[in-house]
Image 1: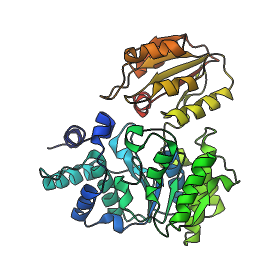
Image 2: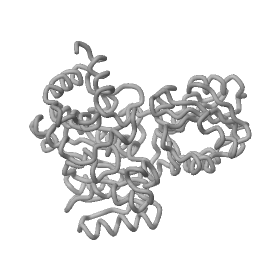
Image 3: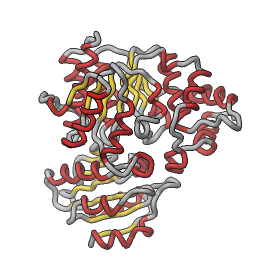
Length: 407
């Protein structure tokens, strides 16, 4: 393979990729990631890390923590998923994406170790790549977002300075369990002896369940809901207040361990997340007026509850919702959460897991009287713009992949 595009094509097509094929790509356990890291001389043991799990909010939380650390003068790595536009968004140092040449050389080298019995998944390779890159860049600390679950996630081979668990809700139930308690137990798999934990969950029963796990494992913890301090951030959305409290809990433990993160760093870090980390897709205002256009990566029940709550507090004439979903989403649970008096435009994400709206049109009819099916995210947006008035609001969401097509 001679080019970056060719090696990426191999990564996407030849290696199991959850983004494209869903749960069949999920490889729980550590055999592959440990072997990859052994080949790379165990880079995950050479860097300090922060580990963040959760159903919703872990990406925003990770970016906010990284932004604050950058403001405090630290060299900070950031590993998140999925990406919206470019693969290299997943691996950043001080907000800058890793170089195409690095990705090419890493994959060209590592694939020579593949055998019939050793064929790592997309996420295992990407995780090892991040650890290797952060080590080569000699970062002071790296913020590592869990991919899926926690207990058996490839990232869970690290021994972090602090870990955090954000909001828990029903998602990937076929892999993680069909109750909030089962999912919380999987997320709590990142909790390790003597490593402090920040609990960002607000639902009282699940929060207490996680606190009990911390007590059983004899680890120090902070209940982030007890943190009352408020900061303004450039990533808006009322749901971010929960994530910001989790961030403050993480910063507290880092300072206890000898970091020097001052009030001005926290304030400036919250205000500069987009600038510092180039974060997109979180209550992202694409057009400020005539009409207002907003996109958000909310894609499950809890996410849509928060989006609907935010929309209910805004002033506009008519609401237009451009939505697309991937296979496996429980639309019978999602649809009742959406605003009733909106105009809906259902589209298919342009990936293999994209769900064609005509396959769930009967469900649409049950819940919505004003809807239209269009072929793509761009068609949905262009159509809604063609009929929206200047005081209307257009919202785009349902899947990360819809957002990636728009921005």
